[in-house]
Image (tube, rainbow, N blue to C red; front, side, top):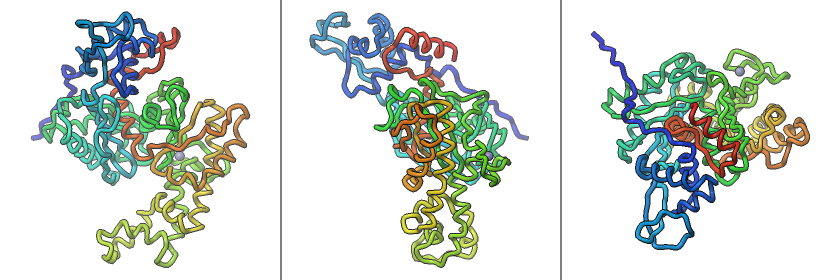
Length: 461
Ligand SMILES: [Zn+2]
């Protein structure tokens, strides 16, 4: 007889949400390399000193996010002093941990972020063979592996990024994963596996989100020198991989659409295309300009003789040992194993591979111009596992995009390449978990209107 076990989050273990002032102060402290006083926090956030006092005290005593120390130093009036000393505050990066899982179409990755939302462990990755049960077990294994190096009691929960729309913990589409992933309670399954392995994380917060939303969140928070979350408030993130995704952050808020269905940029129909897409339609952008489209077009390259060909690149991955000969079964596998990234490797020496990659610049440039005209973004960041192909189609993409953009919306540094081709989605899954627990991350000085907006969003969500 099988006994059905009901597994639920243990809400008594959940921390309380942060107020907008607390969230904003935490964001400021993430950017500070040295301890700061309450006066400095007041100057940076434009909050009142009373609000800063209240928020900092809660962040120290209730949430345990901040370290407080008192130094004898003159820093102006209005400071809390103890025995003539001034309070200095800094974020404790190890106060809490957030685990991110990126359930991608070809790989499943995991990361651990600390309270500073910076990575605390190397990115781990295993292949996704397209089987739901296998993927959930691998995700749970990666979670358990990640918690070996950190105190499990400080893990706030698990954020999972899924390559399709989701409602709550349930998957609602699965274009690039296959029907085995359709309408499945992914969160519940991962909980069950963690429970079977006797992990306390089975009862912590687990949240599922569209991978495009996770990616743009990571680009906004951790995008590196090309991006600024203060300057690039309207940010679009395009992920090139097996499919093509779009994350939208408007005025610092992620736009997900009804039931998280926004961002299916890859299924924009390009008028001149007729090629079938995995979604069932014809002529979608990702049917002509994704890594899988390039891999399909590169199939004739496998006919070339051995030596310096794309066949050798794929074969090298199949061999466990360099000297080993491939079995006939492995040789049969080669066409199915061929991916867009192999074409990028071949392009170093092969003109046909370079031509294929150049060819995607035109449809991508045209589709991105639609986005520019629609959203007038501050910045568009190109990322994903196929983004290393960008140098091959950059000039064609920029030329087409500029030619199709409405004049004032175009600027030469509008499109930038990501600094996080592997990590963005995984980090974003962990940051999304943080926002689910504590409320939307706020940053910068509070203007009167913006402050009201922040309060409303945090209270309602
Ligand atoms: Zn499609």
